Figure 1 (cartoon, helix red, strand yellow):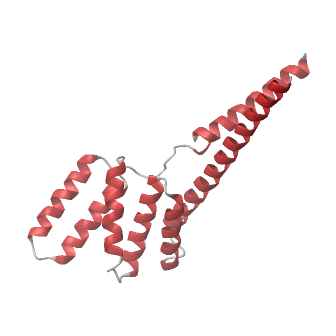
Figure 2 (cartoon, helix red, strand yellow; figure 1 turned 120 degrees about the vertical axis):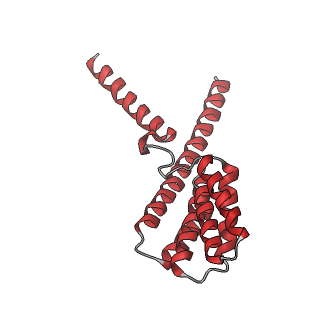
Length: 175
């Protein structure tokens, strides 16, 4: 009787651990990066519209960068995609290593938040080529790699479950 209770408790702990892992509870929040609300995005859009009326190219680039930052930190997938597009368009013409690293980081973050982990990893690796010791980029790279591993484990779990169900049905039919 006692052995049975210990076994049930152990199985319960394993089940809780596995379900917590798959639900994201084991790693805290699903996305530990800051979020930006629509009021901030609207403010950045207004700021950019004002800057575009003037002649100061530096101010325009600064406003575009702030808006891009706000967009990739948005809760809305369409905003994130818009931010990625703006950043990718500006990466091509940027020669400053500091600006390039910031933009590549934000593009990587945008892809991460969109669930495109392979593209996110490519961008963060390019970012780390520019600035290998940047802790913020290293943290994102770790988060990306953790999600790739987690998604792989989930995929394997689904496949094993499907095989188990098919084997169970086959065994039931053979009886």
